[in-house]
Image (tube, rainbow, N blue to C red):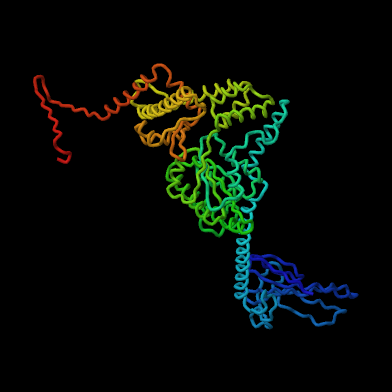
Length: 597
């Protein structure tokens, strides 16, 4: 029986007569070793003879054999068979003999060849290479197909009912509040008593549940007005089935990651095909990655719409956080183009939410299927009911009606402010504290500086123009209050005065200050282009400042100082030299000639 041994490169050997191998550097060889055959020992004690060792070089087709000879003795009359010897001792060098049976070629009999149909090691190597590359290619194609299918399945799973990152955070916040109340010894809130159901909730529920098709929506309202709460409540009612929610961010790379988290999409960063790619997938920037993600979402939405018959819903919250520069505007345009196409196909309903007005002005230029919803503050009556309900649900006692009226008259119908004062022991005191903080913040933003230096001229120009507008708001509010008291009409102290956008530009004498006032939440602009104070606290804080003694003089002083500084900047000084006492200088100004003359 023969064993076949394959020697790696750098290992060949000289052989002892007994078959022992001594490694020496040579080319790779394949050889066979015959098992030792033991003959019965004769009376003379002759030892058994090992079979000869045959070493064959595949590349050259030659073989080498050991010099062992069969021993003879009285019990073995056979004629000794002598084979070519590699050497009588370990130090002797091997010599080669040509195999007469193979005529100098290797593999003609097919033995030792990987592919018996070939008789050449070159063809063996070529077939092995082709087979290996084919296996790699087929495996790569199968992996890519599996990976693409897995990506689409993960995105579809992100829209299934159950877990949603934004909704899970909201639920966890409620659980933490309940846990802290239990530790303090208070009774936990009943489900659904954190806030009242608003009249806009039915419309938002229909949008989030996918009952409306062919449109996308833009929600606009002041900060703290309840836009996100309306959306999260609608998602909670259906366990976020078919809905994804994410917040915008000024950094588009962060926004890319948030979109990937909402869609459960890794932007091919978890793929193992990077070894064969020439470019990094993220080399194109966040806009290109976001486009890839939206294309994947489109494929998922098509098959989901065919199966369920309703569109998916994708919510972009607080899009005012995008920078109002080229990158931010291009990103909004990119999202709006997808929203338009998806609304036309009825596969995805996109919802945009913003506190500021500039995204609406930008998106209105190309909008054809966009519906705008204004989320306003609660009226005086509804705000009183809401505050009473919040106090009862949180403190388990009903507050005094007069205190509720005074508190609502101070903070207005802003849901966020009502929630803050409902936690206070005294709602009136809590409302006054909010007013004090709002006044201090307002003065820190647009406080007037009499006799200011020219270094702060631009800032004081903006502040003085802002106070001109706020002064007009206070004037309208006071006139409305006196009119209602004189005529006996019902007076809503939380109704904010409004001025058309074009009129505000005339009052401020500047057209570029409105956007900044809207961004810092001093004023708010609705879809009808009516400008109003951002909140009741802003209006009352401005009223306290305007009604102070000497405010008009301070405002006029600042405006005059700004005019003086601008006049100095426009003044040119002429210097004449080589003049002595008694010389006369004649300066003539001719306004009849044009500049080109």
